[in-house]
Amino acid sequence: MLTVDQHAAIRHAFYHQGKSIRAIARELQLARQTVRKALQDPAPPTYTPTRRRAAPKLDAFRERIAALVEERNHQPRKQRYTSRRIYQLLVQEGYTGSESRVRGYLGELKRTQLRPKRFLPLAFDPGQDAQVDWGEAQVVLNGTRVTVHLFTMRLCYAHRTFAMAFPTERQEAFFSGHVHAFAFFAGVPHRLSYDNLTTAIKPVFTGRTRTERQAFTAFRSYYLFESHFCNRNAGHEKGQIEHGVGYVRRNALVPVPQVADYQALNDQLLAWCHTEDARQVHGQPQTIGTMWAEEQPLLRPLPPQPYPCCITTQAILTPYCQVVFETNRYSVPADQAVRQLVIRAFPFHVDILDRDQILARHPRSYLREQDIVDPLHYLPLLLERPGAFDHAKPLRRWRETWPPVYRQILAHLREHWPDGRGIREFVRILQLHQDYPAAQIEQAVSRALTLGCAHADGVRLCLHAIVQPETSPPLLDLQERPHLAAIGSQPLDLRVYDALFEGEV
Image 1 (cartoon, one colour):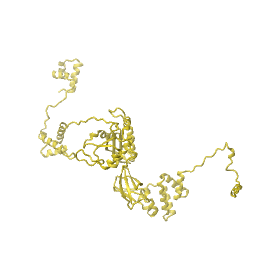
Image 2 (cartoon, rainbow, N blue to C red):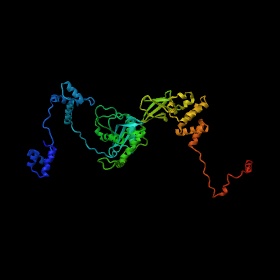
Image 3 (cartoon, helix red, strand yellow):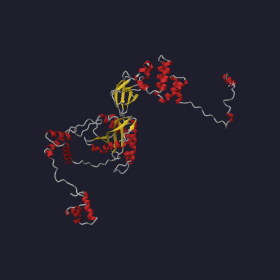
Image 4 (cartoon, helix red, strand yellow):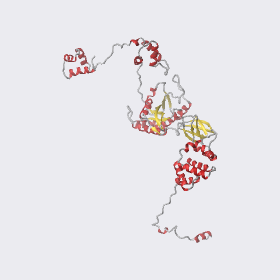
């Protein structure tokens, strides 16, 4: 068989150098018929095997391998024969060849038996459809590498994509992702397509029937969109978002971002989503932003208030002024606590309420058996029980971050009032953190120590002077009114006062 170089040399010698077929055959030591074939066909020859390569060890097991492959097609998706398992079964039955030869033959069977995947190109009307999916990504959050869950929604017409990171894929995060996406799109698509998410529907085992969860039905009714759930293992039915999750991960989160918290990460993602408006998707007539401006008026309008994306549950106050949610303990202000409380757990924070009044808000923890406390909640108790100050657990972590002036004024108050009043005075100073920034309180404590008024009222007075400093009124310019210049400096005539007092004026 001719090589590519020989084929090129024959055609070059005949067409460029004008040599005859006889001369070319003699120089290259080829048959003249071979030279003629090379001149007739401009493409170089390709090798096509005419018979199967001999495999004496494998030939006796070809039918058995075909039977195992057929059996594998009917096994559960996660419990099917692997190439290695098929090789092990063949070895037990007497096969002495290599595993790589079995793998190669299985690949040949797969290429000959599988039908190529075929899809229809789709077109969407503006305002009608969007697709939703979850993905995962790695980020460095406050110095620790963690896996975050990416909620992603894409408008099918404009290809505008929204992405937001959450610590979980729970239902409250699922709903919150929708609410923020609708705000980003300035409207609600008429229909949303999903995988078979358990946060939206009950588990699917067979068939096409889907039963929505009541919470998702209520959410969908609030925003008036229709839902569509794909067939099982049919991700191509929402191919835009399947590609979109990977696109967000590769373009918005590479290199791996290093952020302080989820708020900073989601601010970064939102800024990236806005920059995508200037991009033009391949095959689309205009940029994403231009097509979205055309699509946005056709979206459903947003309701007046966003949907409350939270879990609501009842809670009983513990003797330690805490409520328990998902094994974690969250503190409540000691002077406002009642026995029956309500917890609203959002994706990133937890609210504790007495009826409709929010008593406390904490960052939500997804760990277990954690104490999430605000030391300010326990200060009213310390006013009643100053003897517990040194051992109060809620204050121990806070004390590690106190500036040195706090320790100075605490030592001064304890020395001046050793009977417990000094601790109470210091607790009253700490209570100022409920209304003022820590930096201003530190400055006020330092000034109170300098002025010799190191107590709660003195610190409060210095704090007031810092927050609202007194300013001298501007001097009046009396050059054009010289007759008024003497007012305020003229001698006093007390007879006028006496006359007024006696009623003569």
